[in-house]
Amino acid sequence: MAGEREHIREIEQVLSGARSVRDDIVVQSWLRCIDTHRLDPARPTEAYIVPDTQLREHREQSERLIAIARSGLETLFKQVAGQNYVLLLADAKGVTVDFLGDPLFMDQLRTAGLYLGSEWSESRTGTCGVGSCIVTGEAMTIHQTDHFDTTHTPLSCTAAPIFDTKGELTAVLDISLLRSPQPKVSQNLALHLVTASARRIELANLMAQMHSEWVLRFSRSPEFLDVDPEAAIALDASGRILGTTRGGALLLAQAGGVDWRLSSPIGQPISRYLDMDIDDLPNLTRGRPTEERLVFGRNGSALFAHAIEPQPSSGRRAPAEALPKPIAELSGGDPAMAAMQARAAKLARTTIPILIHGETGSGKEHLARALHDSSGRSGPFVAINCAAIPEHLIESELFGHAAGAFTGATAKGRKGLIESADGGTLFLDEIGDMPYALQSRLLRVIAERELIPVGGTAPRPVDIKIISASHHDLRRLVAEGRFREDLFYRLNAASLTLPALRERTDFEWLLERLVGERARLAGRPAKLSPAARLALIRHGWPGNVRELVNAVDLA
Image (cartoon, rainbow, N blue to C red; front, side, top):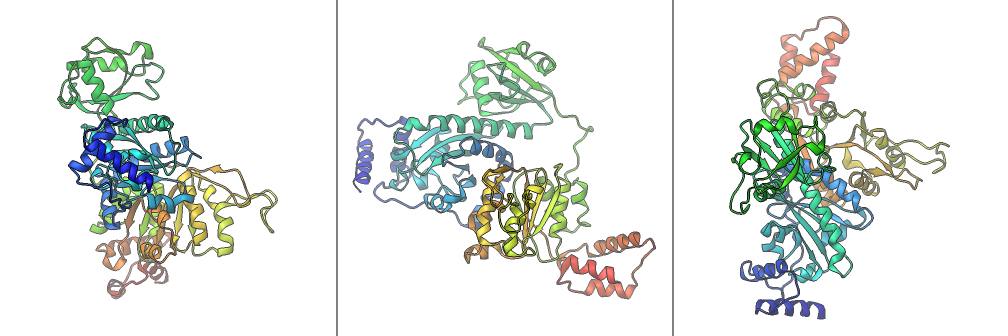
């Protein structure tokens, strides 16, 4: 309590105009908390987690960025492994839309607000890494008592902004600790790492959005130009700037002698900032030695540059409805299926986990296999029915076991089904039936991309795309304490819903396809009588597609 009173007294002194040893960015945030947000340091508030419906909306709006940023988050998490850091990716409103943390501390992380769905806007939470970063657009560390609200003073939060290609703040990457050393300088490395990660996410976003345009990447050092550039811009065929990373905008402003806060480079010719035009780009590709790829700013500064040509196309963009063949073949034009297929096509080549919803027999495994076949992953598709494996065997079946791990274990050990999917896709059907005790182990596999076999001690890395499915209402299982909430959110990074067969408008297309497939397998023509066709159309199909397949097989 004495510490809280001292903290409140310090804020009151700052409000009265007294000088402070705090960083100016902290002082200005404290003033905003009182003058603008009308927060009271004497009234601490608990961390706020937005309702599930709001979280789904925030995640859907950020879905593309989540997919692009995921690799960067996982790389950063590995860099700080064993140091108890948690990573948050928050949207522009301060809501956490993705996170990585140690499953052993999930309860503590949720209580502290270092969790999926937590809102860290400055107007709600006061001075904090995410919220103050959103307001200022600057990377920073808000360390312990830098926080306005005494609820959060044990935390140390280091955040960096992520800007879109037009220069608008779109997200914040935060790396936080529940407990940390007292000196603020202990987080200097965290600040460096999170800033570098945010820069790389911006670069990946620009490359993904501008793949059909010229992209020019910059570095002050030739050694890093091709592997870890500092900045990038995209140019159209006339040499006008279409988009930049934040570093690219700052670099252009410096090279052109303009104030980046007052003048956006978007739409401007590259020649306004650099002594070059569009015709110089072919000379800056990898075909020339890095040391020869120099460009000069209007202010006389020199930079190494790497030009990446637009990706070749067939002369026109593929129509929006074009889908990978395995996904396209899932339906015959039903509107609900078409919407699901379009979303599935966008998710197929990402690494984010996908949760498939649908009634029993609606084709969840068929959809999972189509996603795998459209993913470009070279490894196998491994399907596991969590409800079909006896509970006393499921752990060793999933994780494998080391030599002599238990009575009956093989002498050489055995690879589990999860490791068997390395390089490919792991489909966990009926995930709601997984024993609660095993759910934390699966969560660790997803978070850390490694597993430890039963009886083993050394972790084994695994590269898997995880798709799961259940006919249960997993949210209800979470509410009943039968399914881990943190695992649910991890598996539900993206979701797809299959309509029931009785709701589909392409029933006759599906029927004709099944009859045709059976005829080809039998090597003879097959045709349904009008009476049989009418009976099939009128049936309610409680067993969905699986029941229809069985009916056609028996016809």
